[in-house]
Amino acid sequence: MPLEVWQEQLRRGSLDLAILLTVASGPRYGLAIIQHLETFTDLVVSEGTIYPILGRLTREGLLDAEWVEDEAPHARKYYRLTRSGAKRLAHMKAEWRAFAGKIGRLMEASERHDDAAQ
Amino acid sequence: MQLSEAGESRVQGYLFVLERSLNTFLPREVVRDAVREIESHLRERVLTATASPNEREAVERILGELGPPLRVAQAYSAERTIDEAVATGRLVPIVRAVGHLASTTIVGFFAALAVLVGYLTAFAFVAIAVLKPIFPTTSASVTPPAFRSGSARSSRSHRESTWVAATRSSRSRWPAGWEFSSARTAAPAASCHGGATGAFHSKMGVAF
Image (cartoon, rainbow over all chains, first blue to last red; front, side, top):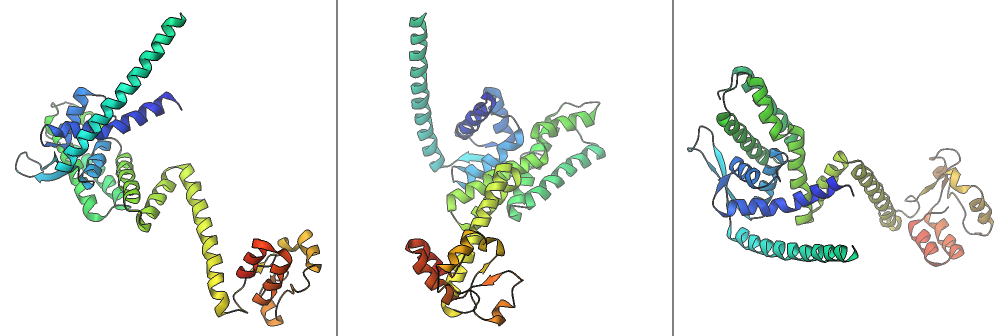
């Protein structure tokens, strides 16, 4: 598998978690979510691909969406975390930390082995 | 930044293409909501963009960051159809998801083709099996001439009771060289073939 494909899979796999983390601190509309993700990560390759993910997370009941008409010259669709979304986020965070810990230990062991070989 | 008429029509054109693309696979109310959200995104981007002497360039940059409308529509399609198919397991979403994969990837196209041919074949066999008890003499299969050459033809002598073509009237309905086999022909064939294959031929009324 080419490196680019692996990176793309990694990016896609972590976008759900990144979006839920972004919305966890309070309701945000689409562009605000994208800007937050762009500030802290490079996960957003194309802005247009974030909205379908937001739609799916809403259908799954993890996010709640609401149009707000009178805040700007145009309407904004705000997303907030639901109770089910908060539960899922807690599980995902725990899972991510455990996973990252395992891979980290594996990398350390591999590097120790490399050092010993030299 | 305030859009000129040309800039506004460029944005409207983008939204039009997006809406047309989404309409092919999403329900109308979902399309309306999605287009409204993308329009809100574009308006927000334009509003916060610094005024530029080259408006066209600025609008193209904003649209470029969003992605081509067909790509955005494809992202919606992937999230919606495949997710729905996996979540519900219902026939229509599954067919829609297969259609999506078939229209967007080469492997998906051939996979969908194989699935379609497989299901149609299976359906044909089931239909013959169901119709056979009701129309024992007319619901049957046809054997193309190519299948009757070589060993298949020579083995016919062993299958004494596998007599082909029930009546002249039945035979006359098929092109020259094709054989018509009725239920009566298949049952004895089963005894010659023996085992599961024979039983299968017997049930399906297929005589090669």
